[in-house]
Amino acid sequence: MSYRKPLPQIEPANQTFWDGLAQGEFRVPRCTNCGHYNWVPFPACRSCLSEDQEWTAVSGEATVWSFSVVHRGPGAFDDDVPYAVVLAKLAEEPRGCIVIGNTVGIDPADLYIGMPLRIVYEAIEGEDVTVFRFAAADAAQPDDADAALSVENQPATVA
Amino acid sequence: MPRPKQAAIAGVYTTKQGKLPDRTSFSLQLEAIKGACDDAGIPVEEVDGIIPLSMSDHLPGTTATQFWAAQLGERPLGLMETGGASGALAKAALAIENGMCEVVVLFYGKAGSRVGPRGTAATDRAPRVPDWSFYQSGAYMTTWYALWAQRYMHEFGVTHADLAEVAVFTRHHATLNPDSIMGRKGEITVQDVLDSRPICEPLNLLDCSLDNDGGYAIVMTSAERARSARTKPVWVLGGAESTYTDFYTTINDPWFPEEGKAVRRAADRAFEISGIGRDEIDVAGLYDCFTITTIRDLEEMGFCKLGEGAEYVKEGHCRLGGSMPTNTDGGLLSNSHAGDPAGMHTIEVVRQLRGECGERQVPGARIGVSLQQGWAVHGMAGVLVMAAD
Image (cartoon, rainbow over all chains, first blue to last red; front, side, top):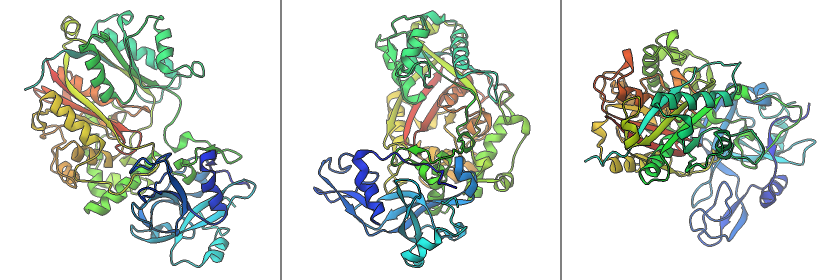
């Protein structure tokens, strides 16, 4: 069955971000004036109001800031319960961005605040979108994580 | 010293709350407007300011204020306010005091749709949503409050059982409110909360507010008109509002600063403007969409210190008979949550200050406060301080 969960409309101003995911990069607007990262992307820096920001690929390293295991899912997500929603704090400073997302290859029972994560990417079949997920930092390398995307314990994919 | 009283809440009304399959959102709103005006003894034709908390689906492009201005007879209105209830009411009082308008009605009504996850049907193809929408992650408002709760519990060593105490005292109050939805189901214990089914961990079903239909309205008018109204006026001593972040996307670190965020700012301003100290409050209505929300409300309102909200609840301050009786109607957890219940706490405080609350009456209640919040965890806040005549 096709992917039935919500996907982004993709505003033209954010095209670079979504293009980045397709290329295996997580890009965050970084202020060229004060150096702060801005998430979610804003038209101007949230610290110094400069409009001079540059989409900057980050390392993909992150830690769990908070998490919730969801047992009642909206729409197509209800087929996947229980699944995890995490807020992951990106490693880059100043001002570590706190990003919401799903996990891949992590038993929700193993999640804890401070758990090291890394961003992995999944091209959605039949759609023009690549999305990101959070995997355990010490999980197998990307090829294996990609393989894990098709296994049944992967909560964010409808097989 | 409290400042002079120039605007008052003269009428309040709540429709039946619950599952109302035979009603429409519009008819609940209209019933609420008429009901609150009748409570005040003011003809609907004299309303000249509106605060519609619901959207309008009348015609694309027609705002709710335009729709209601036309529906109410194409009489030119003097106030079209938006934002959350307590903050909007604070501004309405200033508008009345300064002659922009004389009779303002705040109202809301919703029937037939659901706010929680069961309100979202699965589709055959992937629906498209805005770029940073939490819906892409299978998150919804409950998830965000759960993420907030999880982080709070981590930072302050608070347990789920501590949060559950909020649901317990709130249900107790609901059992004393014959109009509440959950009161007839009786008292609950901490263990009941912990044993209820998980929704978004750490929040279980009984940590969550209800998801029902219903409507309500509040009429505010000038001191002069309030004195001749049908019911005893409840004076607006002051209020304020605040917002700090966008709609459930992200919140930067730190999440729990000592100096507080939007709720703290609104509360500090409201108490300062009204000349009322926190220790003078007899009854409080604090927005309680989830158990964690009440804990954080108490801290940000300055009723207890940061990290001590759960302890404050356990000590019994929020119960009837305690030092800060809170959500005496059963709150959003056990009375009603009809989608945007931002004005419900103000209505209960008004009823307390009028002495109409029967078994749940706070004896001699003279001064009350309501807090509305939302649009992100503690994202937009309004605080209104009121006094009995």
